[in-house]
Amino acid sequence: MIDRATVLHVAALARLELHEDEVEPMARELSAVLDHIETIAELDLDGVPPTAHVLAAESRLRPDEPRPSLPRERALDQAPDASDEGFRVPSPQA
Amino acid sequence: MTDPIDLSAVEATGALRRGDLSVPELFAAYRARAAADDTNAFTWLADGPEQAAPGGTLPGADAVLGGLPIAVKDLFCVEGVPTASCSNLLRGYRPPYTATAIARLQEAGATILGKTNQDEFAMGSSNENSAFGPVRNPWDRERVPGGSSGGSAAAVAAGLAPVAIGTDTGGSVRQPAALCGVVGLKPTYGTVSRYGMIAFASSLDQAGPIARTVADAALLFQRMVAGSGQAGPGSVDQRDATSIGWAGGDEVGLPSAERLDGLRIGVPTELLAEGVEAGVRAAFDAALARAGELGAEIVEIDLPHARHALAAYYVIAPAEASSNLSRFDGVRYGNRVQSPEDGLVDLYTKTRHDGFGPEVKRRIMLGTFALSSGYYDAYYGRAQQVRTKIVEDFRAAHEQVDLIATPTSPTVAWKLGALTDDPVAMYAQDVMTLPFSLAGVPAISIPAGLSEGLPVGLQLAGPAFSEPRILNAAHALEQALGFDGSAPRATVAAAGGDTR
Image (cartoon, rainbow over all chains, first blue to last red; front, side, top):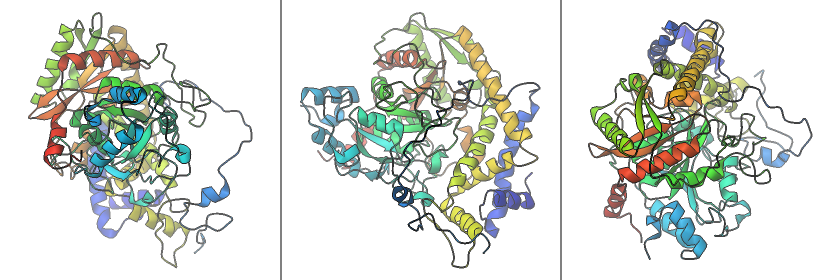
């Protein structure tokens, strides 16, 4: 069961605001889904390796070579708030 | 000559090459129909064939896909074209670059007709989770088209586009194709580049074509496979670290098989016991009987861990989503929500509260929980181990059989709103497609027949890189079944949507 405190803790981790009237429904819905997911706890999985990529056994590395990147003005073009230099945000201390 | 919209993609590209049809003429025919659409399949329509083309130039008709209009799921980035993954958070975003899969199709001459509706960030099985509103099923406008590529499937089924591109994470190409009576292919994981697809669950996301015929799906898939133009078809896309390109021995050609002699098709009997509707089961059994008549040998197989796929998927996909969607914070793109006195964290939390819809929030919460300290091993770790068991099940099954067949969806299209209050029931709609997604293997859905007047999909899957085998078998079966997909288009014409 997911309680109110857990919902608020997870929401804080996810940087997701929840309004007061959204907390209880979220707890109920997450609990329902987790009840369903519990079936994987029944399996004996000792020594079974986890799957990362289903086909590629090894990660591929690209050569570490400089190459052109997105021009700054294009990277900033879609930002909600930008200066000529970069993305503008409020102070983290505010 | 015949109405251009009656031509399959293979036929239309042939007519364009011969000069029987011009690129602007074909585009205009579809553009007019799409503009009169009453299914809400599109989120944006191009004014003309050159609008979304690289450099704004009209492609020549001599290329493989020269002048073929394609409908593109909203989550594919297309330079300068509105791309929101049907989220309010990204509404109005115009990307500075184009997804590799779409660029490959453009290099082959395809023109972009428009962007199609989908569940927000591809999270959903009914296309009801879209910030642009639900899509209606062309077969019955009171019913869902399936999801998450619901707009792409509806557009093809209603004859608003010759072909469409979708993405499939847990069934999001195959299931809407099934519910709308069209063909949908989910390729082997890694064969089509994910670069420029707004990510949902990176270890599962795979782009695939939705089409009226198996041959049309093959025509598109040939050109979508990884790589950039210079690197040549079939190569690895260096911009997608999980891209493996086309490692299949056989070249992907257009399917031509008429028989299924010598082919062993496995039916996972235990999986089929999981709540398949009687009408769906009947259509599936009838299609299998036809496969038998064409020479296939039908055998029972066991996929012992497939029934755990639903649980494993609904840990893995939300976990990866919670990580992928952390980038939507109101800083670099999208819509920011902020009060004057707010600090940085308030900006993040308010932007995400207002920007994300309920299902996306649910999955972010579920995924963050599954990855959080103290729960990681019990949920994400175990789910990835279950995935290994599922991969092994498929490997063992393919020692015995060439292909595996199931119904694509346990039910036909349901009424709008019927499952929206019950996430677990909604998730259970993916029970037939999820095991194949977790195993990373290719699978197609083709129309098998009707139940209660609504389309039933047949899923055919094989081992990694068996797309040529799957496409040939699906083609042979498609010809034998002779599914008449013309009903929805007749409905559109009767509703006054025909602008010829």
